[in-house]
Amino acid sequence: MKVGIIGAGAWGTALGLTVARGGADVVMWSFDGSYKEFDDVKMPENLIVTTLMRDMAQMDVWLVVTPAAFFRETMIRARDFYNGQPIIICTKGAEPKTCAFMSEILHDSLPECDDFGVLSGPQFAAEVARGVPTGSTLAAMPRTRAAGHEILNKLFISDSDDIVGAEYCGVGKNAVALICGYNFVAAAGENERAMIFTRCWGEIVDMGKKSGAKAETFLGLCGIGDLFLSATSDTSRNFASGMAIARSEDIVGTVEGISALPGLIERGEQIGADVSVLKQMRDKMGL
Image (cartoon, rainbow, N blue to C red; front, top):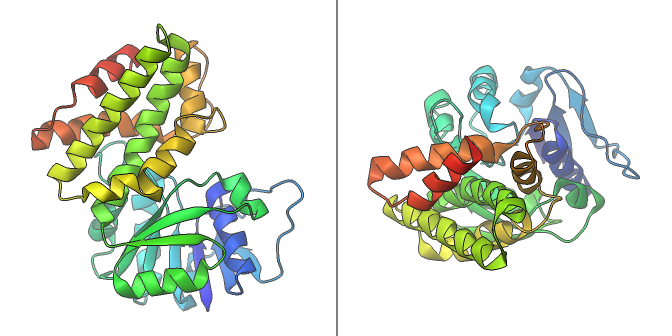
């Protein structure tokens, strides 16, 4: 199978390495030809990097791994080369200006795509690149789910059909991880940290359920699994950035939680969900 990876940052490169190790031929698109290099990890011969989006036309399946802020632009650029391939969205985030989830942007920018899914779970890119055991939820339509199992055979994959739930989990964990990092520095004590963590996640679960998500999705790898990873470790970019905000330090690089938090609040208010704690934390962080 030929797999196109659209996006060559840390997560895109880690997925490219994983898919290549599983036996597929991988073409990874990078807007400038660069890609993430991991220490002591060699690029396999069956993974090549291209700057030409047209190289995606002959791929059997696409994995889209661009930052949320560039997802729409990238999919518009890619649509001339789309030939009905299943698409697996691997971006966890909300578009900063519109608060749209990636599946909503995919529908807007590539409406002819009627078979897609979302890959989400506890996945630090550097560990995936090194082959550390990793589990993920693949919330997808049947054809995309079958393709995902074939090409991601080096990961433990948990199946789901709850795409909206998986997206709420991915966006929500970014926001909560940012809050947890902030409270690691700013909260009065561990009791307060635990209380705010629980109430924030509860508001996101309620929001998801009001939008049609299944409650059990929030207990799976894409839910509590990813939340545990991202909201308890300063290896998490969102957690580390939350600490930086509390210390009035500069933020470096793309931090999805910074746009995810206000985006979730806006969504919650639109559907009549209680987002009072999320709003309190947004205001404290000055976002």
